[in-house]
Every structure is written in structure tokens, then in C-alpha cells.
Length: 570
Image (cartoon, rainbow, N blue to C red; front, side):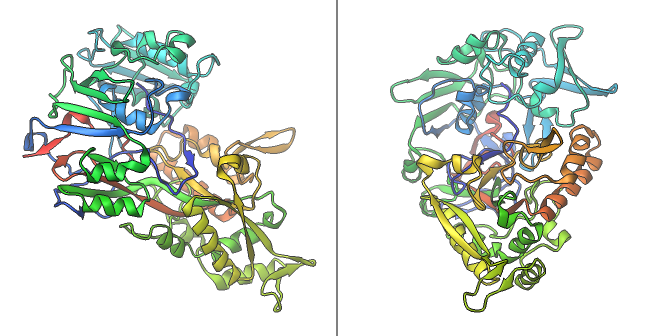
């Protein structure tokens, strides 16, 4: 079924909880060790199929009861569910750790593109690919998927219409095994909607079928190397076994079991060998437990999650770009990274691009390119030039009788937010800025504090995707209405950046990857210079897994493993 939305997702936590990615980097390891540097695109003990043993079991987890099996619905749009369903769902493109999409010939033999002048994608499907009831996957399934996900019928409670809303027509070609997808214009990220394959037509035929028809497990809606043997609704346990309808390489593992376990109990469950896979997040205690587990390893890769500060450009004190730039240069992000990630492995260095994480193709160090990196002396000079003079009595700057007070919204109970506020407060005091910490009750006021723009600075996490240029407007853009700029809902800085508005339409339609990357980094530089959002650091992806398990671990930008290749080293 189609992948969960490619748009950036936000999370308030210290990048804890399940991550939203997947991918590659090699080598077996002894128990209690960490296996790869955090800069690796993936760390999965990559091993050839013929070097693995047939047999063995895998136990994973999910932290909540399954309310729906439809990952394309609002209620099912969750990485844990996506991971659980990945062994039983079609995957037309696999992803590498750096986000590169690779065609999966088990489902898709060929994809042809033509621009005339709009984009037309022709898919040649593998006729061996069938749903679990034996029906061949065909154009009718793709047509039903488009009709459900394109946003034209609001009764379908879809998680995202991204991509599908840009399609004008989906039709069969010479037969059901040829699918022709026609876009309104060019659409360079077209693999984002093709990669997850179609929804079974019957499961998307009507809003009722889409919204309510997946509450029970329907075997004919699924396909893949495994199938569900049992779902115990009382315990939440799901058991999967090799699928007798599968036409590809025979799975190596004989059983996959998914147990319902609360997130806070996962570290102990992994250490006790109750589960074989543990997404550690930024939990130093959990990392220590996983590292000490017998016959286990912590796999480490550069993850898609990154912490950042959003600056509210509508706040009177931050309306001046010179002040925002001074704050960029006055905040020691290295100290923040080192303290937030204390007790965890990997490089603890600042992230210097708003669009790309450091291991993605196209990443440019914008702090270096713009000169707007940590430099307290330059920060002081900027504030002097902006008219904020230092009051030697208070140690803080003043202008027109007002002190340079900036409010930082601390998300109460979120350790990273609390620490980041304190560290930034220390840094900014050194340049004469009084950063006042205001604690927000997360249970009552999140995400309201963000959506109501009740802050000068706020910290939370964005989760990146393999498509870094797909949703620039989501966070950094807006529209012109009656001669006024209206920021998009996720443009929490409420800032208009001319270069974003100018180049976004070109980026959305530019089919040449090199030209598109060049345009993307022009925008990335403009975002940095505008003082819109200050990235802090890219969180390493840390995953505890059994030492002999191969082709699974810290997956980077790849969302899920290729399950028929997961097995134990001989």
C-alpha cells in the first residue's frame, strides 16, 4: 500500500519514540558493541542472501492496539504500523539509507516517464504479483487508490493527498498490467506516490470501505513475502509466517511476531530478549541497556530526525532580520548537541542546512556559505548596528528604553527542550540578550503554543524524508491574498522569504536532478540568511538488534527492511 505521507512530520519529544525511516551499512559485531559511525547512511549488517541461514524467528513490537490496518488513513498514519505491515504490503520502490529509490522488480518491471509538457508515468507491472487471494495486482487497484487519495472526495479520511492531488488521470494501458499516470504538470518526486504501491481496489472503493473497512484484518487486502497467521486482539500480538502466494525470493525467517509493549518498557524487553529490535531514540539509559544486552548490537546511522529552533518573525523583538541573525551567531549549537546527546554515540555537531540532513545528496553547509555560524563577536556587532546598546549595569541590551528580552517556550517535561532553553540562555547572555524561559504545559498547550505562535523561540523536532525538496512550502512558504502574504499553516515563523516564493514553483516542476538541487540550495541559503529556523543537530539513529541478524537495523532514510532478505548469519 502507498507509503505514509512524504511531507515533514513534527514531533515535540527529544526525538524519542519510533523513528520514521530505514537503511544500509555492514558488518557483524559482538554483543554489547556499537557497530558504525553515526554518519553512515544506514547500518544493517548488510549480507548477501546466500550467506544467511534459512530458519529462525524475529520478534518486534508495537506500542498501542491496532485500530485500523489502513496506513493511508488519518487513524493509521503511524511509523510503527507502517513497519509492522511492511512484510505484508507491496513495495514498488525500495529505499537506500541515503533516500535513493530503487525499483523493486518483484512488483514493477519498468517505469517510463515522458514530459509532453506535463509528466506521464507508465508502469509495467509484474504479472506474477498477486494479492493474497490470488488476484493479480492491476490498473484497477491503482485507479481506486488515486480516487481515494487525491483529495477530491473529502469523505475519504486520508492521511495525506501529497502527490496524488497533482495527478489528473490514472488509467489502464494495453491491459491491466500497464498503468498510465498523468500529472497536471511535471512532478519530479513522482516515485513518492508510486513507491508504496496501490491499495486493493475493494479497500478504497468507497469512503466507508476506506475509513471503516480496515478495522478488522482483511487478508485479501495484503501481499508480500509474509502473511498474517494470527491477530490476538486481546493481547495485541500479531504473528506472521511465510506467504505461500509469494513469487519472489523465499523468506529466510520462519516467523515474525509483533508484541504490544509500552514504549517505556521496550529497553528492558530488549535486554531480556523478549523482542529482537529496539528503536532507542535519544534515550541514554535505553542505549546503555541495549549496549549491555547479550548477543546484541546497537546499530548506528545518521537518522532523519533533527532538532531546531523556530524564530517567530512576527514577534516585535524578532521582526528585525539583523536581530535574528545575531541570535544565530550568538547560540552555541555544539554545546546544545553535546548536552542533549550526552551518553549517546556518534558525532555531536550542528546541522547546517534546513532542507537536507547531512548524509543526503545535495547537503551544503549553509552556515559556512553564509558566514552565519556561531560567532559571539559578530553577533555583538550586529546588535550594536541594529541599535541595541549594552547596559553595563544589567548586562543586557536596550533600545528606545526597552530591554532586549526574548521569550523561549520550554515544553515542560521534554528534556531536550528544557536543556536547550538553558543552554541558549547562557549563550545569549554573553552577547547581552535576556532569554526568558516560559514553561508550557505540554498536556494542555501542545501544539497550541506553536499554532497560535505564542513564543519568540520554540524548539521541537522535524522528521525528514527521502524527498527533501517535495514540501518546501509546507514550512517555509505561503500564498499572496489581497496583496498580503499568508504563511502556510506549518510556517510557524510566519516569515515571507522572497527566494522561496520565487523558486518554489520551479523546484516543484524541475525534472533535472542537478538543476533542482542547485535551486534547492539557493532556497536553503535564503532560509538561513532570513533567520527563519535554526537547525541544532541531526539525531543519530540508534537501534538495538540481535548481533547475527542481517539486513535490518538502523535504516536511515529507508523506511523499512526488505523482509525476505532479513535473516541470521550462518
